[in-house]
Every structure is written in structure tokens, then in C-alpha cells.
Length: 155
Image 1: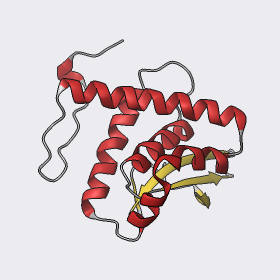
Image 2 (image 1 turned 45 degrees about the horizontal axis):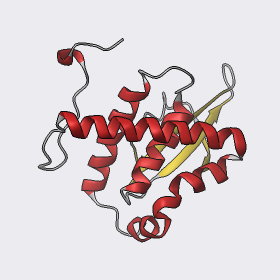
Image 3 (image 1 turned 90 degrees about the horizontal axis):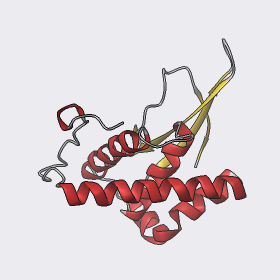
Image 4 (image 1 turned 135 degrees about the vertical axis):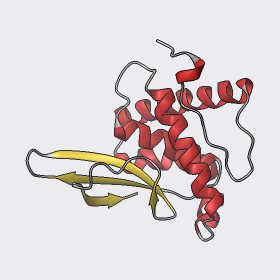
């Protein structure tokens, strides 16, 4: 169910960037949904390392070059995209929890040549629980959880 426009989350401008208009918002939502479908498909077919490689494939060489020079603008844009991913996937049926959100955001960031790491962590107490999030320039872009997750792997 769609919320009234006044209640929908707004994307903060990126260093002088203008708020997205209706057409740009629709394109971004379409890109997010498409990335979600790809991520879900890849997860059924291959191990996580291959999934991430496939999602990043569009701009792997450019992204590795950009990784040497992360900028504050990249972090701001990554946070903005993270909010858009979370808001859009909240509306979709099916499993759109942390791993799918993280994979979708990884895809969007790679397409924009913004370097990022997908982090998977876990905790054993009080119950075993795993969590995934994305970091850009060493800062979380998607929620890293409540701080109780030990980092297991960065991809």
C-alpha cells in the first residue's frame, strides 16, 4: 500500500544535487526492482561470491579504479541510494531483508562506479543471528545492526 506523498521518505540532496523529479524517481525504482530480481535469481544459482561478482560485473574495472579514490560525495550518494533501496524494497513482496538489500545496493553502487564493501556479520548470543550491510569509505550505508554483529567477511 502506498503512503501519501507527505509521508514518503525523502531523499536528501547530494552536495548541491537537486531532489529527484518524478521521472528520475520512477527510473531509480525500476533499477532497484530490476537489481532485486537479478539478485534473487543469482542467489538461487550460485555461491555469494559469484553473486556479488555478477552484480558488480557491469563496471568492475572502473569500480576498482574508483576504489583507490573514495570521496565524500561518493559516501553521500551511497547513503542516498541506500535510503532509496530500503524504501523501494519495503514495498515489494517476498524476502527483501538485509542480504537482498545489500546485494541490490552493491549493484547500484557498482553501476555508478562507487566503491563499496558488502559485509556479513554474525552473533552467537542470545541466539545465533547473521546480518549483512554495505559500507562505503569505511562507513555503513545500510544499517550495520545493533552493534552486536562480529564481522565475518567483507566482499
